[in-house]
View 1 (tube, one colour):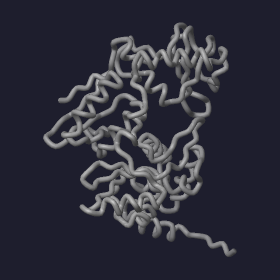
View 2 (cartoon, helix red, strand yellow):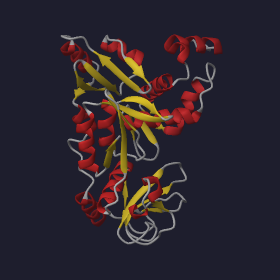
View 3 (cartoon, rainbow, N blue to C red):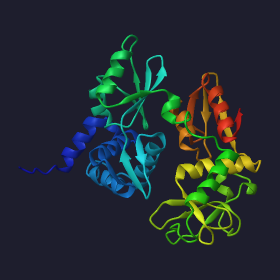
View 4 (spheres, rainbow, N blue to C red):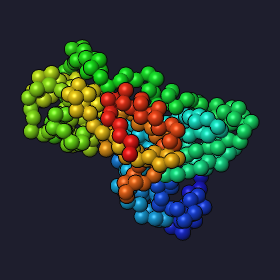
Length: 336
């Protein structure tokens, strides 16, 4: 086998052949991350981010924080699969039908390879990929998706809202049952050297402001920033997990628990949507559970409102979505 070395000029030429002058854009970074994980299948966040930044170094200096943010965006919408302890994995191809020949694509290989497999150009904006299939060709397109190892799903099935529980008192009761069944002794939940914070909805303000590092007594939801660079969550009845029996929670379960506690305390957070004739811009100040966030995101295009990132959702879809969020999470939805 003969090994050849690719020089800086060649790397730049290849990059520009793929993304034109958009080398270093969110679109190019997202595709590099997809390609990296499609070849690795699984890796730590740090390893994947460093590999992408290093690989593009000869062509463009990528800010690792920008790569990290793009990776987080891909995780939230389901383009990548997030695991415990900082691991991420390639996600299988899933194609969501939005009606009228429009499909959102998640997972699978980089866009150029996926477009070739599906024999259709794909529209790309940020981390979003959209296929517009001409009338009468949807069956053939869905057959090609199946041949590529993918599935065509409805928005409800893709997001998981058809099989995930609402954030309510029953959810909190299930956490207590989990504690009784699988709770571990005080100090057994690995805090990685950090200090536990309690979630207290009665503090008011945004959900970020409701975490209190001074509390050590009382039960409920707790979090700690682990020394390896990720949040660890736990549920207790009597005090912080270093003092009481606790059950460790996945990040998504913790996100659902936050809304259940807000609802139980009668202190829901607001979701503000700005409406125009054609669309609604939604700015999220809270970390929605995965199912509800994906239901929003699958209908949305990326947008910017007052310099802040937002989700732009068609006006005819928004009433149904806002009703779902209110019922499932207890959110106080305000449309202006």
